[in-house]
Length: 141
Image (cartoon, rainbow, N blue to C red; front, side, top):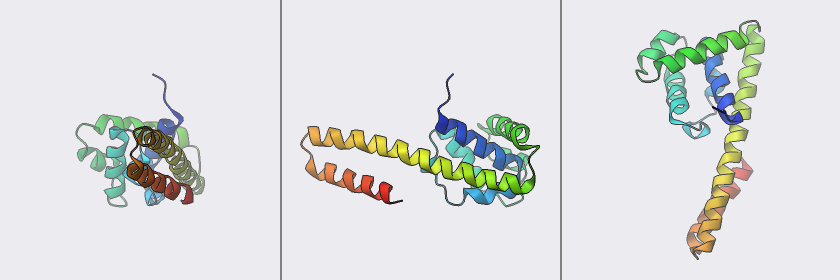
C-alpha cells in the first residue's frame, strides 16, 4: 500500500499528539476537513476534544473501531519522536500541522478545479462562479 504524503503527515502528527499530550495545542488551527480519510478524521476529533492530559487509553476508549489504529499511531509517534526533546517535539507538531494545512489546501484546490471545469462544461455558470469563489477564498488563506 502506497501512502500519500498527506496521509503520512496526518499519521505523524496524530502519532505525536497521541504519544505526547503536551503537543496537542498544535491541533487548534486544524479542522476535520484537513484530514483525508474517515479514520484519521475520527482520531483527530477524539484527540482534539480530549482533555489536555487525557491518556492514550482514555482516547482509545472513545474510539472502539479505531482504538488499535490510534495505539499504532501512538507507538509510531513514540518511536519517531522519543529521542527528541519536549521543546523540539512542540516545534515539530506545529511544523507538521502547518504542512498538513498546506497539503490539504492543495488537495482542496485540485478538487475545486475539477468541479469548476465540470460546471463550466455543463453550462452551470452559477455553480462555476460559486466554486470559483471558494477557490479564491482558499488561495487567500
